Length: 254
Image (cartoon, rainbow, N blue to C red):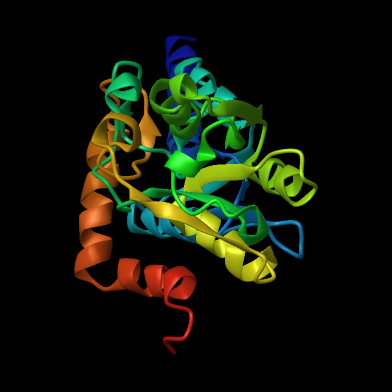
């Protein structure tokens, strides 16, 4: 009987260990997929973009599987902290405020931000936005920047659940301009601007708001940070990162 009981315990332990190993093979990423070229829903209803390809490459390097969940941007960090996901990759700036809540991988993309507006409105500088309405994504560093830096100068902040809805309202005349990451705004100008919209003023780089670049968010003291950093370093060394970068930011390179 003791031998049978011991065998049962051993089998149970093996089953638990196997289940844990299998669970560890999948890294659950959360993202907000209305942010091309970083993340978006493709024609086949699958998530695509620079961040998605990079996450898949990281998982391959770590011999893990990736899963992705499309979530509202302002819910990403709370959901991560409540362990609904293992990591967030969503064009997220590494900022001092966010570092109080979560850890980040090393930066994988250096970013800046720009204003975009209708050329016919003759908004040629940031100063010319005084008294105008600016669309931003709710919960984003862009929203906080406009509130802190420009609201006192008469700029009206209009938050949206996605940048795409902000751009849509700009084309409908409901807001005068949109403030977004440079790559995202330029993607929109190329794909949908139809030559009618243009950048307003210079690119803005402010480490207090836009940090030191994009990072992959993980929970505090999570071992995934070290694994992501090692994988990112390897991907940059072996040329995989550059191939992914060229696919989305240098599309003419064959």
